[in-house]
Image (cartoon, rainbow, N blue to C red; front, side):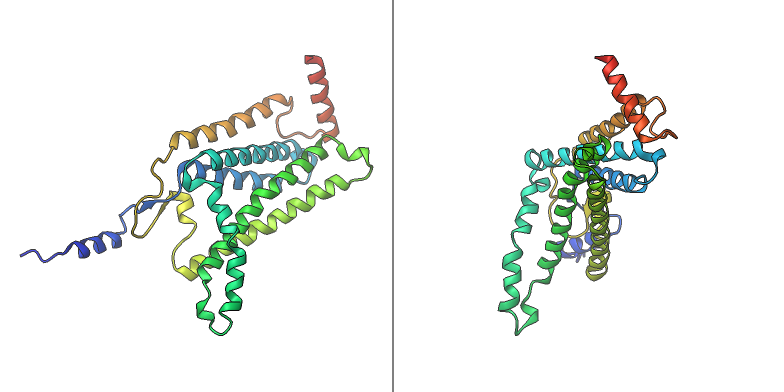
Length: 255
């Protein structure tokens, strides 16, 4: 006689390590995340030295383009990738902080998981928001905007936002590691596989792998175009001023 119940079968399926899990993050979001992370890492590592400067600039422009994609995808893409979800988490700060006063006599009444999610949302928002002043100040430095007011103030602004963004990135990674230990499962895994363990339906109805491939091809294509534009490639022993002058001269000759 078969005594296996539907509940026990479901439980066994959930404990099966071969079970793929539910799809919670689509392919374009994951592709954006890793391209954005690699672009920032590369830009930070190539920030010093004239030899790496064109590669640094290219990676900075790539970050700006990726931000543009993420904003458009967040506005016009699927609901689970929408920026509205991030915004709704952020506006929950006042209510969550107010819960401290209401639960002063009983710490167990505080929703700590909500606070953890709020910190994560704040870190993501800060990373996206800082791309704008970071890339604008970098563009201005590359095109000598600071010369109009004298001094290296624009370069110092660029460096400030670069270092600040690094701090936020490290805090973001530390938060993920800490929450993974606290909740006893890897919170970074869904950003790799798109899937999360546990019961429930797939949050992602269409994975849109084609869009992720198109995003990757666009980034690679832009990097190749910049490489072809420079006679010495993205790495050069020439000083930045000479490279910038060469590019402006070529643009003038083309006109």
